[in-house]
Length: 94
Length: 432
Image (cartoon, rainbow over all chains, first blue to last red):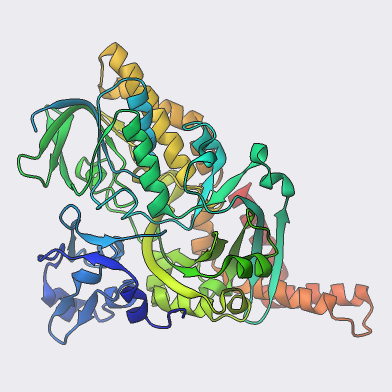
């Protein structure tokens, strides 16, 4: 079957998760008070960012390490590093 | 690790492996550092690998490299909601070994093989290692700090092939953070489909491939493209727009991909396929004006790290390889002079600006900006073109001359005569 949802897409990928997040929202108040769109929750290709009412939940485990959130955050509020060597996403095909 | 190398290459993608291979072949002591589990495990591309620049590195590579299909047909679709205007070129000369033009590839496999050629030539490859920063002493890059214990490693030259995000280039101040209109966010799926079905649906034989670039409704009229490429027994289907367009239109990239997969012009081609992988990546599409400083004291930038992508012609990995080779040749000469200063390594910059890479980027330097600023090319002209073709080809008793008049009238009515003229002139200027 061809995938229909993001969950199905993410399920196809191999991840070697680190125990610590390589993505950090620097100030959750900025998301709450200055950023009505919370656009990272929209354009992130893996829906890593989810707004939970008062803070941004960061599901770094499913991150593709593309860098969009770092560049696209209108407030430069995301600290973006690479996961520890050998960790994170492991593409097998393309 | 207190050993010193001649060259440290950060990143084992096409640029890094090309540079490591060329340096190692001339006897330099090369360390190639890859952050992934293996080369290719972090790398993504739509899938077209050009012959020319690869052949300059490894003659007759197609005899042993893991390739999918030689591309013999390139199609371009201007797609509306329920129609498509298509054109393209299919040539059997591209199916002949002497004339192969490009191939579809799966990067995780290709990159592993390419890096192994650098290793065979004598380069040392270490995987699963992140370079945290360049070590700078007295204004000169002298090595790298890795995330391994005692992870400082030294070299005469550090080559940054660390990809589109190039955190290391930013650390050195060679470029600022990129703007959302300088990068394209692209998502794709690999969809397994039996070889016979691919051959039938795309009108191909076993060792023949087809690429389709899709404009218009594939991005819901936003600045970007979609693609559908044939592998041996799978398809790569993907779509991307500039990150700024994605933000402005509040698009979810995977929704756009599903929209494409379900589009009536696309769906029959992928029907019955099995999704095998989903991948997201950024493409540096800022072009000529986004290319950062590419050489400094003890350091050079190559490939995506130097933003070397021609988005109009979907060329990138070839530019990566070619830039890697030019950087290597410069480093080899610098080694003879024993001078790794910026002025010595600037020879690489000269080579780069004198090559097809910077000449092509210069040619299209206004294209991205023009299409970003004037979205009518994607969201108005593509539907207009479809309507015009429909009208022209529908036989309903109207004389052809009257049809032509009607078509011209409907186009100028939508945009205005002067605007149409302006749009045409602007587009021509951007790509001339």
